[in-house]
Amino acid sequence: MPKKENPPGQSKQQQPKQFEGLPEEYRIYTVTVIATAVVYFLSNPKPQNYYDYTFRVAANMLTGNIAFTEKPPSWLNEFVPFEGFYYSVFPFGSVVSMMPFAALKAIGWINDMPAAFISALCAGVICLFLFLISKRYDIDRSRRIVMMLGVLFGTWMWTNLTMAGAWRRCWRSARRRRRAKARPPRTPQ
Image 1 (cartoon, rainbow, N blue to C red):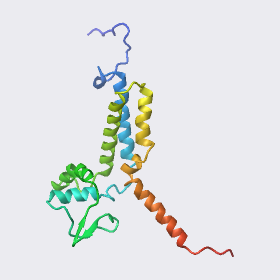
Image 2 (cartoon, rainbow, N blue to C red):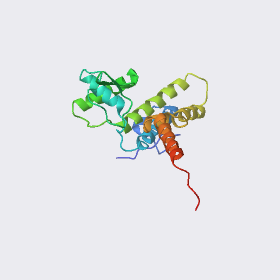
Image 3 (spheres, rainbow, N blue to C red):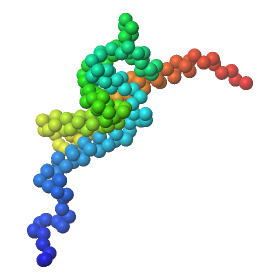
Image 4 (cartoon, rainbow, N blue to C red):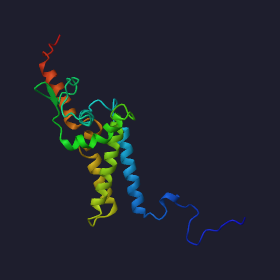
């Protein structure tokens, strides 16, 4: 078989088939969305399901209950006791967002909350939405990317999604400071 020649003006290195016909701008944003999701996935500390309030509430709601009858573990101290039941103080939207994953647990496909996957999925979708919002304005590509990365990595959002929230980290540091103040002062020897 004769060797095919490249048409004039086309390099020998061609784009992979999945990117054919996709403008360069969209390729850059696709890579940015995927890279953001990967960074969020890899920066999620272990154990991934330690603060799974909303996941537990969603699973409980799938059984038809809005309150817990058993006292939650000590590290899940956000539940409010009332007349022998424990109620969640979290917004309903955050509970609804966990329903698909709670359903997967109910049918036995997963055992624990896949926190790293959920935070990566949320970060990727938010990155995509930020890109779509930025398309409505007359700004260049580099500013769009900086805006997306600024929101995703330059705010408390990264901490909130990957490490059980900024409030949790602030609470821990406040508790450490309180303990340090409670210690008797050291006397020089």
